Image (cartoon, rainbow, N blue to C red; front, side, top):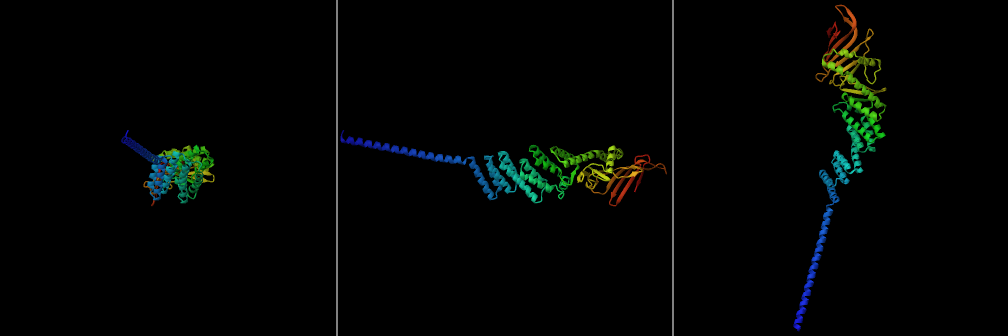
Length: 444
């Protein structure tokens, strides 16, 4: 092999070596580029995964909510919390933040609802405590502002419904009783129909709530409060007659819990009032029919006579009255006296002329040793005003009855009197021996 061929071979080897080296460098560069790209991709994927984690999303929504609260955009803050709850409905932090936003915008009802919803969902005791605190803070504010009402009392009981051993709720129950059911505030009259409406149904709802709490979580402390609130007035309670039966049933339930002597006596007093209402239904029906004659038989019943005699002899239990004792179907009062509770139905004027009234008479009036028997009726005013005011009065008495021209015979007979009062005076029609053989009429 000559020199020329040797140089050609050497040159070829060198060229091939350079090509191999260049290929290796290209492969290395490609590999490095791939690795770099892979690392960049992994880093991006990690960021995506981090940003999509629930905790991160909730944290972002809470930051937004806080920012909105700082700018007083409370609705947007609440919306951010709602979005956070869609991500995780068990986030205690979100429920607290959302309630805070509602409280800041002074929507206490919504704050209470979201806190209770949060507690139901998470069973986190801190949310339940927060819920009770929000309610009881309202109670304190209303008491301090002299605005304590049955609604205030209801809020206390609502707190006890969720936390039966809440110490603050028990203390505020005491404060509510002092504000509501003392002689000075006379709140007992709120249970009767007033311009603001009748409050009995609200009172009854509260008492039934307390009884239900006791049934599920009995405690001596709660029982004491139930017995205490069973009497909504220290010395007097005003009540619509239509609620008598409901109040009696409520007192009966309280008695089953373990009522005291006062509630037992008030229960007996209420039962007596219901009995009298039932008995006098017939008298109302007779007078309202316009045919008054059957009232003679009613007033001569053993029951009516015994009622008259009990009043005359001072042996009547529970029913308070003297001489003309009204029976109405509208309002009544329970009055606490030294010997216990008594009831009295409202008279015509106390009913505001809007209700008919039957009057049982207990005036001691004897004719030749025979006690008179009397009953009267005052119908509803025709125009809502007192005048003209009509009274129908029936008396069964022993007196002289004119028999013939100049002959007078003493005998039992009925006298029926109709009086119509006006602002100008009173016109009276008197019928002697009413319905008898020797009936006579006089007007004056």
